[in-house]
Image 1 (cartoon, helix red, strand yellow):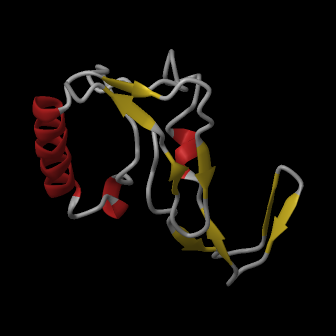
Image 2 (cartoon, rainbow, N blue to C red):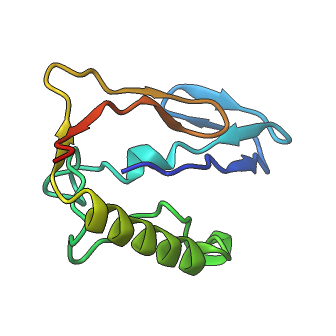
Length: 119
């Protein structure tokens, strides 16, 4: 759902794309989070589906620009989720909660108000 890092690339030659002129030598940020929510690729792009198959997201980049730590990051996330679900198996987003995203060079959430029973 979220590509944490927004990679930058240097424009190698003057080009115009969809009315936006870009000059050789300029740097651009690539919003990979938009690609990971492409309705032409994902039938439910606005949903987090952990067991989606196939799951051709590019949150870790692709090809020669793929994150070297992607396998470690996946393992760490799997362990974190397993431990969370062992301790807090039933949780939900708080009723009426607004989930806000923030961005810059990295993307994230302002808050994610969760509730669960403590019994």
